[in-house]
Image 1 (cartoon, one colour):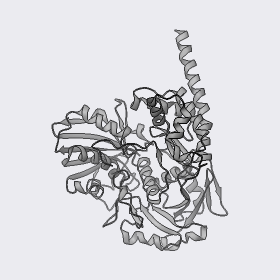
Image 2 (cartoon, rainbow, N blue to C red; image 1 turned 120 degrees about the vertical axis):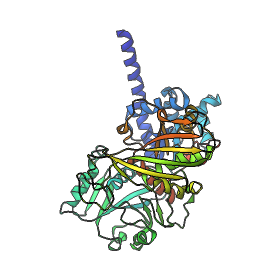
Image 3 (tube, rainbow, N blue to C red; image 1 turned 60 degrees about the horizontal axis):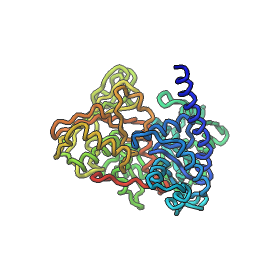
Image 4 (cartoon, rainbow, N blue to C red; image 1 turned 45 degrees about the horizontal axis):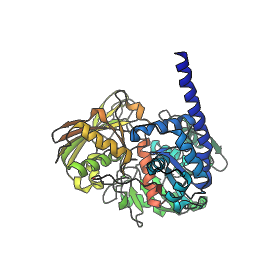
Length: 489
């Protein structure tokens, strides 16, 4: 028995050593060539050896076997010799293609597969695009973490400034502290310093100018060297085009993205579903709500495949800063009652907002919400009456699992089937929504789906995707993910 235990440990140490060999190769491609590597969507950049091992193990979800590191290490070594241009490379998919080809010369295969990238020396990275965060609350700080983490990648987005109301004399230190430490999402991954004299936060080398202002009209971004900026308004103070256009009066601002449902004729964009509706002339867009982002991609798959006659969405949502810790006056019904002590029944416009991204579902969905005493991660329960039966829960789960792994919305839809998963396990999920397969119910033409979503980090990831698409700030992905038959993007 001891020999068997020693053998398992020896194998682990060997695989860990191989993963450690991959780390400098991943870093070299990232910094020298603007190449972001991943394994079926799991990013390898800035990951530990154990994280890289986990990503290799995740591949069994697609290939039914763990991705062999004795295959990926030579592939990574070959990639570093090709002097590639900016790109996103899925090494699991590249490896699968190579193994299926039956060829022996890996480097020659890669030269043919990545012909248009060869010898470009990192070229092809999008031009730097200035981004300003107007507001620095829960969503603002998480968007900042995402943008800082991608500052040296092929994405051209650069966080240049945050705009806040001055709250105290030590406002700068307090803002930095909130970025550095988070009770839900943990500590910031890196180093944060302050430049008190110039009023800036320096996070992992990213200079973030802190601008104090009461109104967009008070801000001149050009005075800080900021030009043609996308302003991400995460205050929720204004939601219509007329008021959000105040941002465009600030010198240096050119476009606005709202992190809340937009009112009136404002486009509500759910990345993965209707981001192709973003036009070059669009100056103001909404990234909809966290709940709308969670349910719309799955609703799109269900409607495209089976047709949705009608349905109801019930959201079990974590409390937010809009609520009170203890009972106090609130303009909204029931929201004045203690968020920490009660389940609070409230309304949500998310179900109706789905129709802004999927007009064919207009008038077909109703919805309510229950706020519960958890700080993050929510669940949407979709009770759908379909035009066509999915057959069984198992058949429906196979479709949704396949979409999460191989479909055009694999970054929006994730899938789990563990009998032990609870809400805190989903903190940090980058997906818009995560289908809990074990909870799926199919009864004839009726389907009930339980969808987890990190209403903070998952939504923030979707907002960044909208901004990347809006500005053309993300490189091509290789190999391209083919669209699944019968599933629209």
